[in-house]
Structures are given as structure tokens and as C-alpha cells.
Amino acid sequence: MSLPSPLTRDLRAFAGTMIPPGPSYGVPGADDETIFADIIKSLERDRDDVAAALERLTELAGRPFADLDEQRRLEVANALRREGGLAAAALVRVVLLSYYRDDRVMIALGQEPRPPFPKGHTVEQGDWSLLDPVKRRPPFYRKTP
Image (cartoon, rainbow, N blue to C red):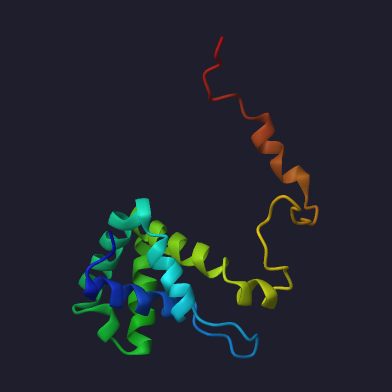
């Protein structure tokens, strides 16, 4: 089940505000036709949270988010980001996951546009000592027999 039409318009406007096109890198914005279709297809379990976040955008804006000019969209989107919460996190997650699944974006990042498995991707080694505080922490889980 998809979103009602006004929320779909707001979602597309938010996606384009969150990730605008990058002509110098040759990447589309998240409101690109192909990417946006993937966003809509990917809503699934996040649909209600995404709808709640979009409704909050409308409240913050005082009118539909898609009807705002570019500068006001950015201000309202940043206000939602500052508020945070599960609904806002779901909205951002859905946009990001679809955006980084797009072949054009992966190629622009220097990645081969393919699933990560079975070949995997090489990840540069980082500073493993950053995990030391976590390793020193006492277990907070219940052991099973």
C-alpha cells in the first residue's frame, strides 16, 4: 500500500531536498524518477513512520512541504532533523537506502554496481582501539543455557 497523493508529493520533495542532484559528480538527486520509484517500492514496514514524518513536515511548514520554495524546504527539513525521533529516522533511512542502491550513484562513488555478496567489498581497516570501551563494558545480555 502506498502513501496518499499529497504525502507522495511531499516525500518526493523531501527526497530532493535531502539529496539534490550533483551535476559535478554526475549523480541524480533522490527525487530522480528511478530512485523515487524505488523509495515508494521500499516503504513496506516503514510506511506508517514515513507518513508520520511527512505529516510532521506539513505541521512545521504550515502547508504541504512540496509547496514550499527550496530555501524554506531546507529550513523545515532541518527542523525535522533537529527534532529527530523514530519517524524522522525511518524517513531518512528509506531515502538513503534507495539512493545508494542506484547504479549511477555507486559508479560515481567508484563502486561496481552489484550486490555486495557473494564477492563482497573491500573495507579499509580502521582504528580497532575505538572498540576497547565496548569490549571492557560488562555484558548486558542474558546468557542462554
